[in-house]
Amino acid sequence: MIYTLTLNPSLDYMIEADNVSLGKLNRTTSEAKFPGGKGINVSRVLNAMGVESRTLGFIGGFTGEFIENALIAEGIQTSFVKVAADTRINVKLKAEQETEFNAKGPDISSTEYNNLISKIRSLSEGDMLVLAGSIPSSLSEQTYEELIQLCKEQKTEFVVDAEGELLKKILHYQPFLIKPNHHELGQFFQADIISKKQAAHYAKQLVELGAKHVIVSLAGEGAVYVNSELTLFAEVPKGEVKSSVGAGDSMVAGFLSAYQKTKDPAAAFQYSTAAGSATAFSIGLCTDDKVQQLLSQIKIEKKA
Ligand SMILES: Nc1ncnc2c1ncn2[C@@H]1O[C@H](COP(=O)(O)OP(=O)(O)O)[C@@H](O)[C@H]1O
Ligand SMILES: O=P(O)(O)OC[C@H]1O[C@](O)(COP(=O)(O)O)[C@@H](O)[C@@H]1O
Image (cartoon, rainbow, N blue to C red; front, side):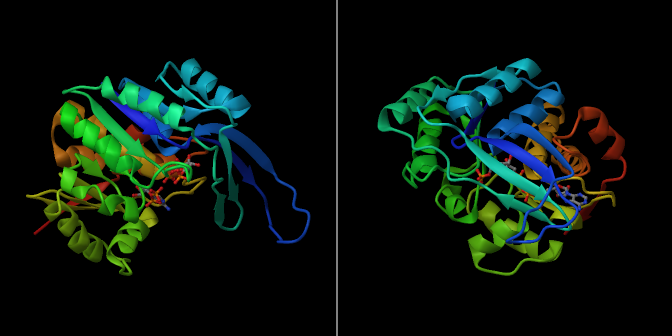
């Protein structure tokens, strides 16, 4: 079973406005709300692809209730630890540019954290844990490392989608998959990464440091895949970007879903990239139909 862990879920409040002036009253032209947070998005996209998963993490208050009810309505299994304070609301503004405000989120007590540990202890060989998103500031920066050590003891495979600094500490535990975007990869290596060639150069180093599969996403410029034998570049189709929120999470879900079915990294990478673009071209996350429609437009090129 795939388990997704979202330590800091969010209600994503997506608003559109024609023009935005700081310091003035702005009115929106549309608004929508979605259950959010990286692990939750991975579960929602897996579900859209017909792959079962269970969501773990901390949720609380009316926003937490909204998220859990929405997931259950979609048929997703949830196993959250309930916390006292409200789950955060992240504001995603689409105007001439996309602007995001990700809130800090509630404090997590040590009892609540221990409840999560008990849940993670029940995972075993054959399970996979997807750790995705930021760590709430009330928890230790070592939290991912602690949880990954548990995974290692239990022979549970794991995937990490997190910022560069978090990635640094966990590569030697040999994650099954990591998916930094080019900014996160740049943060990791303190370099400016703007081309696929540069991304591949650094992704190879991540494989040498322990990652089994690495995908680097470069938004509208496409993506790069590297494992110990293979380097692939993906081109993405042009289209109207409605909101790229969750595009990276969709790539993770797309790769896991297709790899589970085919065990073929190239096919999984192509499907993953199609999922990212299908989400970018949607308000909310992709559907399997949208991914299938884009699949043949994702050109995969093998590199030396
Ligand atoms: N402008 C775009 N046009 C087409 N596809 C896009 C665009 N922006 C994002 N995508 C798709 O979404 C994927 C992930 O986007 P990116 O913004 O790099 O990730 P993240 O959400 O993790 O920051 C890309 O690899 C691509 O497949
Ligand atoms: O945990 P973080 O880093 O604050 O990110 C949370 C945000 O990331 C998202 O999961 C979107 O992530 P991506 O656009 O990187 O796929 C939103 O749903 C959520 O608001």
